Amino acid sequence: MGAILFERIFERARATLSRLFDAAADGCIDIREVEALVHPVVRALQDGGVQRWLVAVHAHPSQDTVQHSMHVAGLAANFAHHLGLSPWDCVTLVRAGLLHDIGKARIPRAILDKPGALTAPEMALMRMHAAIGHEILFESGVRDPVVLAVTRHHHEMLDGSGYPDRLAGGTIRELVRLTTVCDIYAALTELRPYRPGMTRADALAILRDMAPTRLDPVLVRAFEASLDARCMMEAGRTIRLYPSIARAALRECDAP
Image 1 (cartoon, rainbow, N blue to C red):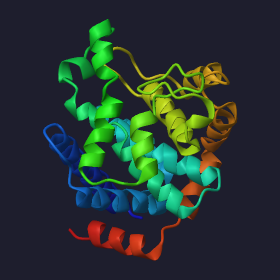
Image 2 (image 1 turned 45 degrees about the vertical axis):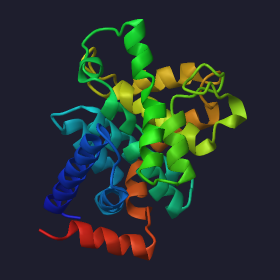
Image 3 (image 1 turned 90 degrees about the vertical axis):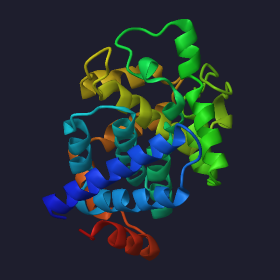
Image 4 (image 1 turned 180 degrees about the vertical axis):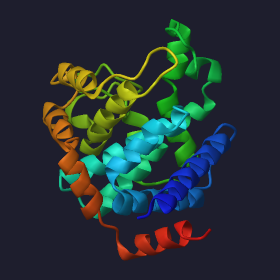
């Protein structure tokens, strides 16, 4: 994939996701737009490479929730490939990664962009975003159980200390656990209003410290291995789409 087409897909994907967040702030989202978003992103990951996608994410001047969602989607696709998951699971995880924080569309910007620590009431409001996101997606007609579970439960921890439902152990779906690892790593390595982005080494050290009590240690080790440059290049070459998805991606992306 040429650089111009890749950049076009990246910016169109960001614009579409931004529109979805704007729509979610006041009501439902158009699930047709979701599919118009997912297909080009998966094509860019397939043809342009996961590594190029993540470089574009970090290079973008805005490091907001939309950018974070694109970051998680790329990491999840790479991780899914590394684990040998099916093409369908890969596409589902991209969709889930893009939408997992949609509930933050209804969290006040003053809280999302606060440069310092949140107060207890602000933190309580922030933690509502997972349940709010699940509600937005369900009311919009989303019925994919993985996407709904990831949106509601990506902050659940194995020891039951997470939110909003205090799930623990085996009650947390494996694909949710996978996305949680990607979400935490993405958040740690991104620039935030209250701190600079961490290095890969520091972020991975935190993930290791969270295992085995809060995060699945097997997934943490596998995620670290998936970040190897050779693995990421291979993922970009071998992530494959079902023909119907590939055709949709071509229609959505190749038009000027």
